[in-house]
Image (tube, rainbow, N blue to C red; front, side):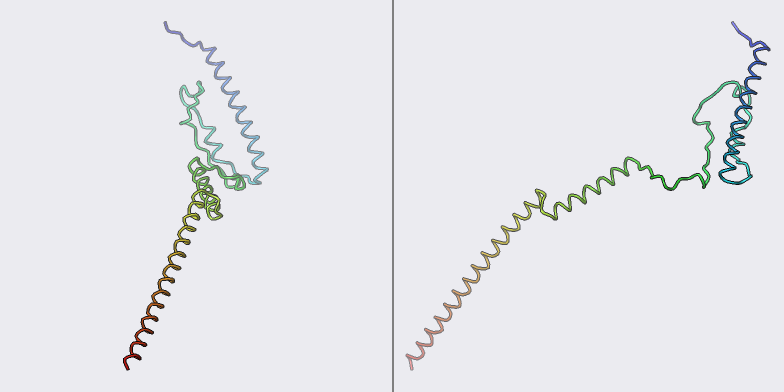
Length: 164
């Protein structure tokens, strides 16, 4: 069964739409006055003209909230806030946290407070001790060899004296 809208209902809808448009224009005019006071310029914005475009067909009667149809509003240079902190993405935040954690670890490692640094220092101490012992042993062997050679030279000298 089909239902038709009566002409009275259409007139009532049209009047309500006109009143709503007047309210929007008054609100836009008030914001324009406020913007003119702030920027002290008499030129009108092209964004306001784009938002006040005529609606064709059913679009004027039905409120449609499609985010894809929303016109992108460009920001004026005077309205861009440079002082507000930039919002970082999750990946950027994680990367910064990762770098800070690495720096903290390196500081602790250089101070010798990490387990790996303690193990490295212990290994280094063992190697130093082994090298010192090896150097002492080598020096002792060298002294023994020198003493042996001196004794052999002295014995040869005595042998040569006794032959003469």
